[in-house]
Image (cartoon, rainbow, N blue to C red; front, top):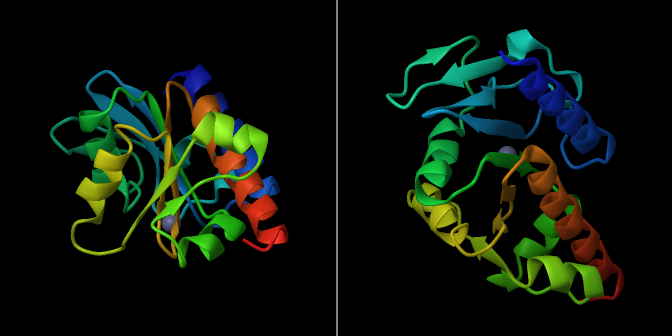
Length: 178
Ligand SMILES: [Zn+2]
């Protein structure tokens, strides 16, 4: 795989783990490449990614490398429905806690409101793939209730920005008692 893609996935994965936005084996990352995507393997450790942990999935669904993430269909649907170049899935703790009580999280802090505006919360269930991808046509980050966040970006760095901004805003809201 291209060195630039590997290096970015390693750095963003490491940041997500060190920031406590995923557990040791949680979350996943992908980068669009041509008509396919590079995506982390199922059950891989985002903080310790090596080339052998990253699969290439083609447009027809065939894959090279390790078994790709169980979220591969969702990532492919997001690429099909948005102009995204990269997708990050993480488990930001305060955002998950807040997702139980709302259908739409509106940050109360300045930066969160500026960058995220409003974050849709989608229910888990048989329609979650289509619902998350559709919500990401407007929003840059979406919560799957009780599970985690899906962010899209032109690059992984941009998607990381949205996940970290979401968790910062969610923690502020939690501390403020909202
Ligand atoms: Zn997850």
